[in-house]
Image (tube, rainbow, N blue to C red; front, side, top):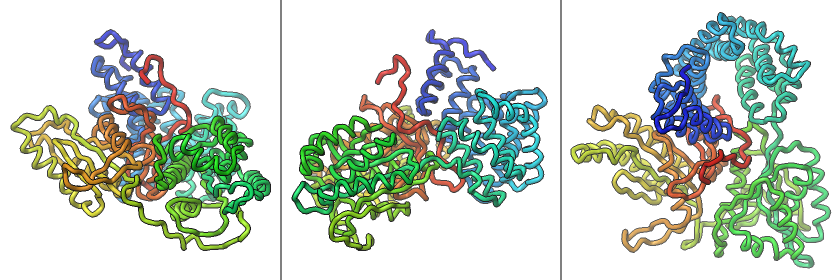
Length: 637
């Protein structure tokens, strides 16, 4: 490989590589990519920077862009193990996201690349030859070539024989991956008994790294399906359950309510009994007096990470949902809040009488639970304290339970209240939003990268062909769009539903990819960038446009995403991704790409790459999604 050397501005390429790696390790894959590409502009021959850039895109789930850059950077001319394995990984990712004949073709292509890399590494006695070997074996199995798969798997086990024994009897640096590879090879070869004997040591070697376990679990599940093996073989790889908790606010002592104050002790005992039967990894919910706080206290007492979502600023939260139950709940609120692993706000602004903010808060908490469970490949369950009455309301326990039920997830209900009602949740009908109040909307902002480079002679072609293609997509979604505006190359669209916004965003990108820019006499590097956000906004008359328009802090936030989005991609905020995970998990996947600095110093937000869901492709591997970001020294906050 080329020595990174030094960049033209006096900063060594090694220092740039180290900075890119720091962001990569923290899960900020696109930031890592940006840094590596900036380094390449000064040191274009640095294979290490090029490799890091492409690997960053691959881990972010941007497979097509990663492949394009793999060739553009000349990595396809590399013959060492790292280059060939990276290409194999990209083709494998493509295959797992494809269907039908395209899937089989890509599986075969990825297998060929991995197998060639394996044979080369084996001849060179490379210590890591087992890595392309096991990938070639599994891809052969998924392609239907069981004989070749078995032969390759046994060859890998032969390579690992001594290392497996050392991992079982000592602490080796790569202990987990050696054991996980051995399990995979045994399963491919059909030796379930030997695979099963290595499961417990491998899980122990993971150090409870649920991301590693999830990555391995997905791969092993593919093998079990291909060989029609019992899925319980891998039960030990199942991470702990991710929980969403919800329930009624407790009444003040002596006052009537759906959760009477005199039931507090009995309910606390029941909650403890339920939690003691479960293996929980993390929990999501709010912190109102009553059910929320009782769940949070019991979870935190058991050392479980509690992630709090508040509907608005703390002062208003205390006045609306805590202090009315009694002053002693305020101190309990503060104790739990201080012990929370994370605290989010549906909006940092005031309550202002908008009950819909409670619904938005609950959907965010539920969506986050679903999103994290999907990334960690973990079981999911809602814990609800409910009096059994399906009363209508803008927000509340029943509305949250209904949304969870509609998403098809498991639930455990703890009953409270003296009337012991047994209404069917299906009888709940949410009321319509109140005009003039904040309501949740999904928003897209987009522009064309390199638009400013166009000449006057090119602008009519751009308007007719590029914006014309975008216009055709927008018109196809006219009945789903609440508002749309455009200026120059800019697009702003508002949708009542996040799912429709996601469909439109991906359709816009597909339309752009179909255009032959160079053939039209336009710069070949023109690309659409789209950013998506979901939040509470006002729908109010626009005196200038003479129609309804959208206003609020969250409109401004949505506008800050597109400028930092890589070309050809759709970035969405955590709230957008969470709501999609709750309501549209079968249609879309959102891969975590880390904390990203918004345009115009608008802060740093967790960001996700939007793509269509694939039954065989899990999300990009991430570190602990709730970990505080590690910002490299000297990086602006």
